[in-house]
Image 1 (cartoon, rainbow, N blue to C red):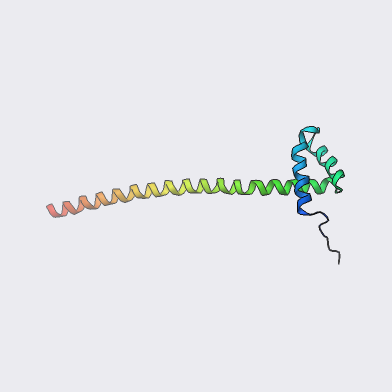
Image 2 (cartoon, one colour):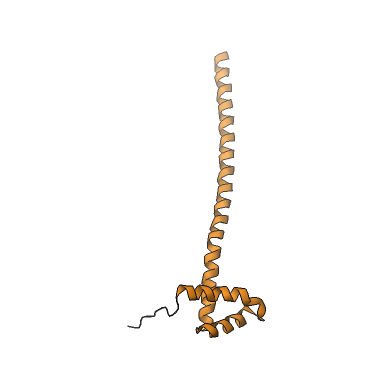
Length: 104
């Protein structure tokens, strides 16, 4: 069986991804930056591109989750407000009909 092993440590991966971000402006495109940096650390440009995409998805996942939680929280707060309003109306209606029965 052919097992793949990680040739690069997490520290090297992290540094390479950071270098792409730092030196992106020095190149015509992100791919050019990745190609240049990949050759310096000894990996393929495609490997470095995958590391960059994984890091980007790790960074955006919590933010997306937080935004989703915020939207859900707003929806639930609106629902609670509406239910409290409905309960107040029902209390008043109940009191009104109770008074009407006492009068009759």
